[in-house]
Length: 192
Image (cartoon, rainbow, N blue to C red):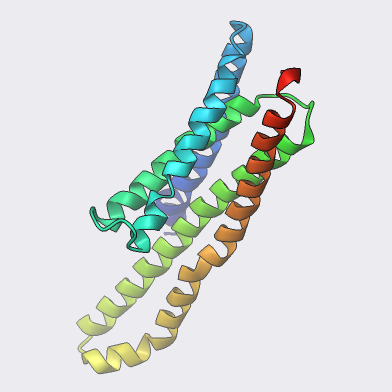
């Protein structure tokens, strides 16, 4: 049973994260092989724009954007974040000549990892609570008795749903480092 839960629930998140790293390495390798590393500069801009567009989900969640379902915007957030992260990682490449871009890339990877982990934990907690509630109702308990028995589980799910308290500061650190990197590029433009 635990093995099937692992395959069904944990493997997809790990696969998305590992594929992000592997695809980055493969594309960067072929860009170096073809002597096309300059493409990486443009991918950094495109990736940054995709990551910025991923925040449409936050705007929808806060009802700044009124149209479209939050689920659609969440899917958009996940896709744009993943693709934007891929492009920015390709932009970063395997270069060890500057600390600020590497710090920004590292913070971005942690933000992506925390997003995937949070999504998994919240989804799993909600599924477990729903299954427990259904089982109690199927055993003949009243709605009030069922709610009473799952009260603490509901509190736990509510607490897990606050995982964004961790994700937001990590994302903010990434944003500050990315902005500092972008500003440094403009400040020292003639060197490039």
